Amino acid sequence: MSVGLVSLIVLLIAAVGYMMGRRKALSSAGGDIRKLHSLPSYYGQTVLLFAAVPAFLLMFVWLFFQPIYIESSVTGMISPSDIAEGSSESLVMADVRRIAGGLDQLLVQGDLSEDDISRMRADETNVRERLAQAGVALGSDVQQSVFEAAKAYRGQNSALWMAMVVAVLALSLAGAVFSYMKIAPSYRARNVSEAAIKAILILSSMVAILTTVGIVFSLLFETAHFFRLYPAKDFFFNATWNPQFRGGSDLGILPLLWGTLYVSFIALLFAVPIGLFAAIYLSEYASPRLRSIAKPAIEILAGIPTIVYGLFALITVGPMLRDYFAQPLGLGASSSSVMTAGIVMAIMLIPFVSSLSDDIINAVPQAMRDGSFGLGATHSETIKQVVLPAALPGIVGAVLLAASRAIGETMIVVMGAGAAAKLSLNPFEAMTTITVKIVSQLTGDTEFASPETLVAFALGLSLFVITLGLNVLALYIVRKYREQYE
Image (tube, rainbow, N blue to C red; front, side):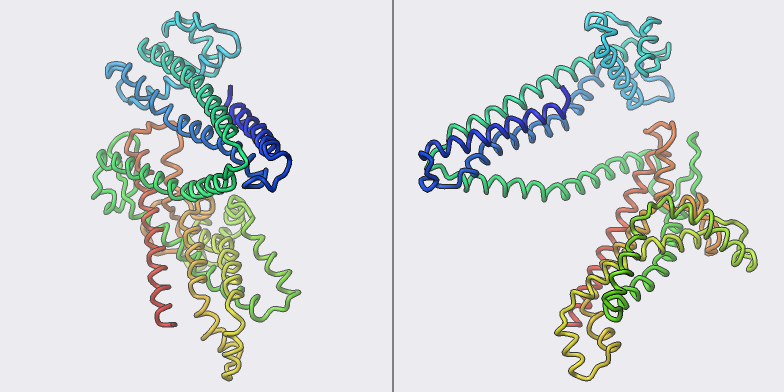
C-alpha cells in the first residue's frame, strides 16, 4: 500500500467523519441549530481534524525516522572486512539499498517468493541474472554478509511499512470515533476547531524555520566532515582550485569566491540602475496606458528559463563582445567571459529590481508628494528628496534579492563565463563561480566520502554565510538611514 493510497484512505475517513459529525449535531438538537453551542459545520470539522491531523503527523514522523532506524540496524551487519579497499561504508549501504529494492521489485512481479528470497545467496549466478532483470547489476565479488544485510533491510522495511499503515489508519479511526462520541449540544465545537486550526497554522509557519535549520545543520555536519579530511587553512587561503580525485588535490575557495563576486558585481552594476530608473519612470512619469503595457513586458524577462539566457550568452552576447571589444582591445579571444555572464545576468535581474521597486514607490503615500509640491519642490526634487528616501527599505530589499539571485545563478555562468577557476581583473577572461563548482563536484560517479565531493558542502556553507552577511549589511544600512530620515 503506497503513501498516496494511505493518505487517500485517511482523507476518506475524515470526510465521512465530517458528514457524520454534522448530522449527529443536528439530530442531537432535534434539528434546531439554536440549541447548539456552535454551527453544525464546526462539529463536523472537529471530527475531520481529529481523524486527519494526528494520522498525517504520525505518518510524516514515521517516514522520517524509519530509514534512519533501518540504516543503523543494518549497518551493524557489515564488518570492516566487507568494505573493499577504496570503497566506504556509505557505498556499501548504497549497494544494500539497491539490492533490497531489486528483491522487492522481483517479489511484486511474482518472479520470487519470500521463501526464494530467504534461500538466495550472493554467489549464485541465477541471483545475479534475476536482479539484473530488475535493474540491479551485481558483481561476483559481492560479499554474502552484504547480501544478507540487503535481505534484512528489505524485511525490516516491509515490516515497518505495514506497521505504519496499521498505526496510521488505526489512529485516524480512533481520532474520528473519539471526536464523534464527544458531540453534544453543549460541546464547544467552534472553540476546539479554531484552536486546532490555529495550531495547524503555527505548525505551518514553523516549516520555513525548521527547513532553514535543517539545511544549516546538514551543511555544518558535512562541512565538519570535509575539514577533518582537508585543512581549513588551505581551503580558505589557497589560491588554487585543482581537484584531482586521486590525491594531491588543491581545493582553495579564493578563485571561486572572486569569480562569484566579480560576475555578480558586473550584473548588479548594469541591472540596478536600469531597473531603478525603469521603476521611477513607470511609477512617476508614465501614463496609465504605457504602464499597463511596459510593466508586464519587463516582467516577462523573469519568466524566461535561465538555460535560455545561457544560450543567448553563448551564441549572441559572447561572440559580440569578443569581436567588438575583447579582440580589438587585446583583452582576450574567448567568447566565454565574466562580462558575457554579467551582462546577460543583468538582463535577467532587471525585472527583480524594477517590479519590486515600482511597487514600493507606488506604496509611498500621495500626501508626502503633495506636501513636497506644496512647499514649492519640483517633480524631480520630490522624487529625489521625498519618494526615494521613503521607499529606500523596499528598494534595498529589491537590490538584495537581485544580489542573492545573481550569487546563486548557475546556468548562465556555465554557458557564458566558462569553468576556469582563476584570479584575474580582466573582465573578458573566462572564470567560474561557487555554484558551478558545487554542481560539478557532486555530479558523476565519484565517492561521496572523498574530500573532492564533500568540498561542495563547504562551498555551499560559504555561500550561505555570504548571503547572510549581505542581509545583515542591508538591515544595518536601512536602519541607519531610517534613523536619519525620521
